[in-house]
Length: 343
Ligand code: ASP
Image 1 (tube, helix red, strand yellow):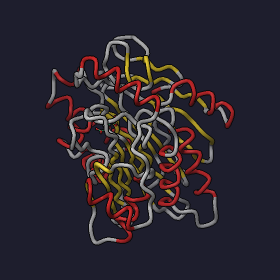
Image 2 (cartoon, protein in one colour):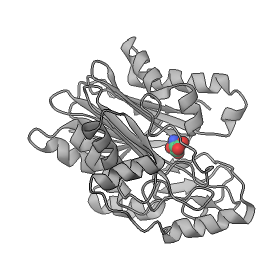
Image 3 (tube, rainbow, N blue to C red):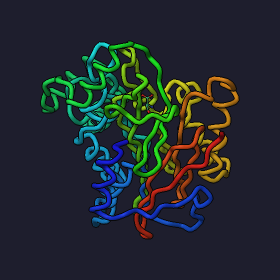
């Protein structure tokens, strides 16, 4: 997600252990544990881990803290520094879920710095699950959140100007291998989140955790697809698509082309596969296979990736194309994994 800047930052904290695809599932009973999407998941998982280490540190507080930490950064894909929609406005999607089916989300939220915190307020302070657009912003203001300026970050502004040259909506799958980030055509980004050929990038920070008391929780936050249609909502704020938690079974979060995740109710589907006894890795693989099966041609051009943990603290992942990394933090330390792929 953050390429070079992030990697340098990581190396000053603690260098993660790099693991290859055949080590994607630890069979031991490990808790607490936190798993987060992409390279930037390493620092996010670190933040969540600090909470899990506290006495009574809950999985819910851990994933919340991790999500806030990345929303506060300038990133192409999460928080107010993210790329705007095609009208030049940054709209944020987020959701959060705990071990008791409590959940909340916001979609199309503008000018509020921490959508994950608003999502948590939706969960805790309202009878609803999802608030959108102006209503979500109104609720956030009522809850004491500050209205930010709405000005694009310098990098998003550059990316938007670049995009306006052609104004083409051409999502490109992310390929992220530790600090190296290239797009499918092999050209590096000319500005964060946009490539020399005018195509652009997208990401979501999704993280799932199991605390020492056996409580699962998950959080998901994104600015969605860069240069999306105004009003477009992806999978990330939708419980059952971008995120799902069932404390009897496990927790799942998604990143990638949201429309395909929604079409297959991805996170819920994987939870149900785990309920049937599949490992997190196998359950993710089956859900990816389903997306490819219904999109035999189109799936060559888009990315979807899932991460999952089960009740025992085993974890796994799968994605359609090479280039998806995810971070794991447990008592064995901080690790960055490369997910197994369909193609
Ligand atoms: N899933 C996000 C969306 O569709 C984007 C991403 O994760 O790359 O909005």
